[in-house]
Image 1 (cartoon, helix red, strand yellow):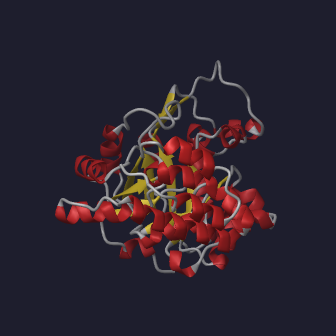
Image 2 (image 1 turned 90 degrees about the vertical axis):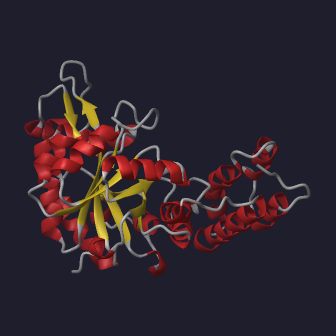
Image 3 (image 1 turned 30 degrees about the vertical axis):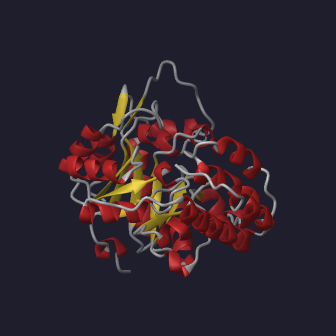
Length: 341
């Protein structure tokens, strides 16, 4: 199967995977506004292999979203082998392995960034995925995770994982990349923060630069990229092939086009409130179309993000988090005296 990554123009702008955020309505909006590749929310390999309907519905996509990469998590190689076959049949362009999620539920089950403490298992999971399908396999990792074998708590399933354990004080992205670089992985997205610093503080761009030295494949820098200026700074400093945008896209799916414009011309358009209202309404209509009335309830968090940063937005947010219909959304955002920056 062709590797779609080879056909993407650099720098690559990716919508990074985010649980509870990167559903198909939001992915479609980001694609409209310049995202080159988009990732789904992460899907459990156990759920995929057991035919879980909810999981399949969660990762369902429209052809216009392509190329779409499905991110998976879990700790059993045999399920990775089976899962990638399922995802290939579903029509995904690629599969991404989650070695970076810091969420308690995922870490407790032995998945996500927890796996970075088990480099041998990481390699087995990657190999199983590569052998199970002809789809291009990518991985998402973090800068580091500390490993204190004397104080850390046992978690469910860890007895099985112990045979793979790497007994070190800290495992870094360099350790993981060195462990898997002989395998046919196409792309690495590196969140340049540690497990202990999940979303706050300045990203460790030096780690991205160090990984760049040893990784010849596609490298996407991720973490703290919330403006066109920041994207340019990260690309220039790290020599990464692109960036993964996560929280920087919340309420701003147009950030991808802004980055492209800024990289090309040194300028980009700032949307007016009237223009933002149009995008917001399009997104709301998509959520309703795809998921029905429940989609609008899920969409409330996006509504809050769209109005963030406006003077007096607190009153507007209080109303938006209670909307139950598209009519209510329109009535609220089209009220007199629109907010301005």
